Image (cartoon, rainbow, N blue to C red; front, side):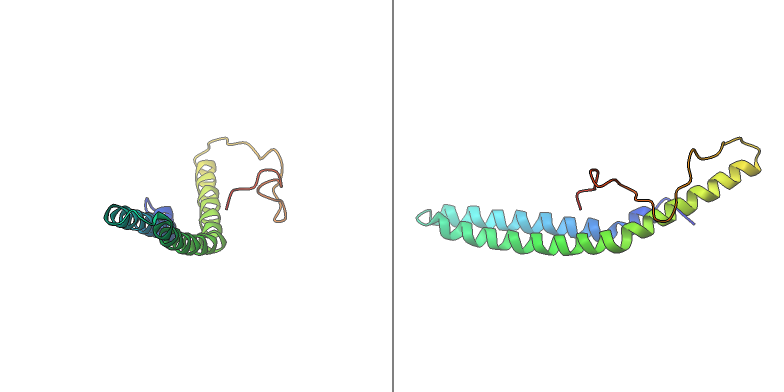
Length: 120
């Protein structure tokens, strides 16, 4: 059964990872500014440290994002389809004419064309 929180709960790992990424980048930027204000003689050294922290955080974000896309997104999609099917059946039982699909969607039909792939 889908509740108001179903999809929010499925997206929680992605949301938390995005929050962690934001905080890590903010802290790294703060540290960069502090070090530059204390000793502006070698900004490249501080920039390298900043970039290393940001790249590490981005790599972690990418790992979580890819896992989420592979595991949670299909669950959410299937839950949404099952919920829509139940809603359609309930409407039919109430006598609402919802018509028939224009074409059948088979299990091997791609959800997106090759030219329209989501940026994950």
